[in-house]
Length: 167
Image: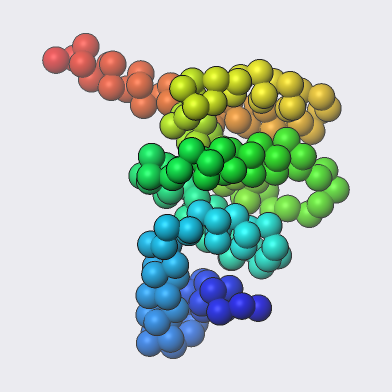
């Protein structure tokens, strides 16, 4: 286990020393402020099998997609999109991945797509339909993507439209 993974595990452990957790949290926050934080998160997500580390990695990527995606270079943005597509479109059916991690990943995937479609990812819809409709398991992932898209884009839009009509 590397230093970052140890820090994440310490932060996730609510029974540990408050001082130790505070130092671990400071270290994790320092990592998230680095320009290569997205690359570190991708590496940790792919290489570490500790669920807390994978969840932390997805949270870092989600924050980057929501608030800092525009600061990534075009190449970095393309690499991030390739990682997201490759993982989701090639999700091994037999690998034991906790459902909440899949849900978090789908959430990240949809937030990224909302930030990049259509200007940077004009093939989003054809990519997702082509890659997620082959088998029953993939069609379930496709439906979960649509539900998340609805929660992230359609429902907030409808709520703000309703609020405007009430004025």
